[in-house]
Amino acid sequence: MEYLPFTFDVASEKPLYQQLYAYLAAQIAAGKLPAGERLPPKRSLAANLGTSLNTVETALGMLAAEGYVQPRARSGVYVADIAPLVPAARPLAEKPVPPPASGAEYNFLTSGVDTALFPFKTWGRITREVLADAPALLNHGSAEGDDALREAIAVYLHDFRAVNCAPHQIIVGAGMEYLLSLLAGLLPHTIALEDPGYLKARQIFENAGLAVRRVAVDEEGLSVAKLAQSGAEAVYVTPSHQFPTGVMMPFGRRSALLQWAAQHENRIIVEDDYDSEFRFDGRPIPSLQGLDSRGQVVYVGTFSRSIAPGIRIGYLVLPPRLLKAYHTRFAAYSCTVSRIEQQTLARFLTDGHFTRCVNRARGHYRARRDTLLAALHSELGPVPVHGAHTGLHLVASPPMALTEEQLTARAQAAGVALRGISHYGTVPRWLPGPSVVLGYGTLDEAGILAGVRRLAAAWRHG
Image (tube, rainbow, N blue to C red; front, side, top):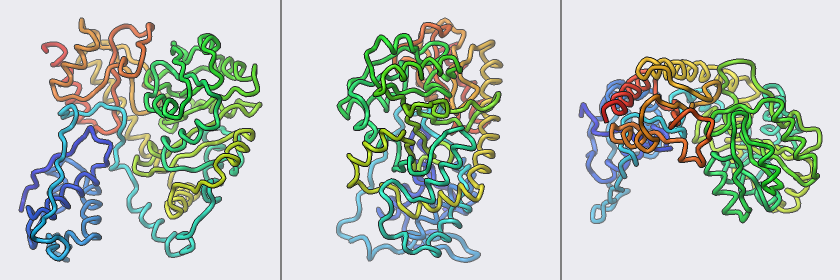
């Protein structure tokens, strides 16, 4: 076999190596890749699929570990005989793989990162060392997270985000959905969310039974004046890089927000600092939590953007009052993150690997941001852009005589996945015209250039 008829679903949140693994496992299980078949060489396979060698090696390593393939020294990788595992009379049915929702050839959605930047060798080595050094990690640990990880997170947050907290204030959990669901049980009944804003947070809080109030975002972030009119006693904000507009909340607005909270001791601000590691222009903006002297800010963070979405490790930093309520309400809960992964991440942080990983990724993403900006201006002329200073997406307002619906429909027809700003809520009046959100986490520079050219042609000629 010299060619593999497989294409990645770039719109999927599943990492590329998992997509390749799932495809090959299904093909082997169904007998479509017979025992003894030699797979294409790793480098040829990576080139044909348009992915990195690390992606291919990781997928093949998983298949070998589960007995689907057999690597042979100086010969290649061969399909194993799995007949004893799969009854001949009832072969496993191949699970149909749905096509990408948009049929997109170029993915400008905001949910992905480049998994090729993940430090596979370093992470794997640390994991092996953790398993060898501490077999006791197979037993239960602290419900709030292992002490070593919480201490490492506290040091990192203090040094890089000016967050003031002790390790015992940190709650570790498997992903933001889980942590926000816990947090919802500690908040006042009515919570305000940015509009437009993060739709998943809105769904989580509504599912938890909270009354959600949508508060407009202006050029400086969430409007505190309109927040005061909403009747909410809690608010969820993304001040460092508002999602999706990209607006950065300046110090004056942050002070006004803290003053709003200080008017009533039960008011809570939830600060989601989701992609603050990737700031490209100007000095880093300290966290809102670091300005809080009254213990009314909950800081929310995750390693899904800075390391990889598959590293399902997030955390809450709870002020003392909510920490007491957390222990009262959730005392019987266990930590949802494997202790082995916790200890691996703790060493990854304390040994300096995380800082190096983020610095490397920041350089790659800065180059992609610059490529996207240059391509937009080259192909479309002067394009008003918002939120390009931080994170892995920006908002562009193409100077075309088209509605947002026409922009997104023509993009989809041309094989480009993106969303209009209205997908996330009310369109801000201060935007200069119909606008789209462009994520650049998954596309390389060549893909960005080609994708923008495709967009420009579609928008000009339909």
